[in-house]
Image 1 (tube, one colour):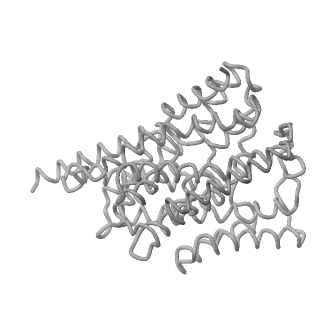
Image 2 (spheres, rainbow, N blue to C red):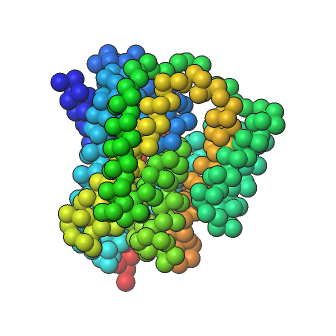
Image 3 (cartoon, rainbow, N blue to C red):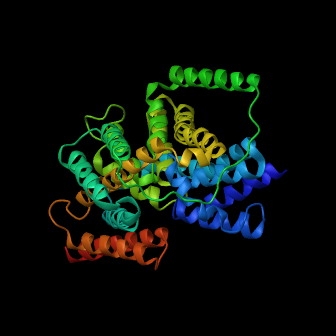
Length: 407
């Protein structure tokens, strides 16, 4: 019964809380710390740095931690399913109806233009909000500058850039470079070790599921596992990876037009659920949709699960030995190296969206104003993310209406 309650609480949070992982962790802290008393009050917010150190979505890591702390591994699975299911169902519906969206209608096009401009401001606002934590000292500034040049100017492969950043962090660490202080409060969880039979059964099940997915859905779905392993710092970090894999003629899987991708990312922001889960649902559906509706739905489910499962295993393992893990020079070096590179990835995503709104067909002052408005509202917290996006979409449609009346 408690498993069902845990699932239902996270289901409601994910369904009604818009604003991504940061908003979800605050609401979850209120429910499970203050209302339910299942956790200490403020415990989830205090452990946000831990959730950010481990690859995966903040919303997913929050659910996994809460489930592990209250009901063990089965509780973590129930909580993760609860936080992911609303996002999956809602964006699956968006995927099914996307082709029917009248994007050629001037008012719809204006609203989408407002969404793209809002997304530009939100991405740059997110970059500025996390800058102090991500870019620390001389190394941080140098690392983000080099990573930005490699990604934006030299068009390096994103995975290669992240691996180089991790290697640079290790060199800095073992050469005696100064590192940020380690969070002292314990987040470790004592879990009973799995029996030898349970471990063997788990390995065989994973191998069997992986083989079945590869045979039925194709090797493309392992791409989402890779995304789950590289998702340091939230959904915006994965946007360049999505671009590289699914957008443009050179993409290995889908070759979506860049403008369609931009519309998609704007829609992910205006619906409940984490950005990267919404996008994974869409791409997974599109990969198998040519083979029929049921195949597309199955593809969406597999892609969503593949994105989330790595963080389930990584966080479960890390929390059992967190004190040793947090103080490992190897782990600290990797995280110290990769953190500035994630800022470069967010910068790259912001420039892409700026090119589709502010600089589309020359400088667009109206789109620039909407982007500045959205970024300002995000930084000052005057409006929620969803309210900001809806405002910019309405202003975009109104601008298109005025322009249409003047013609």
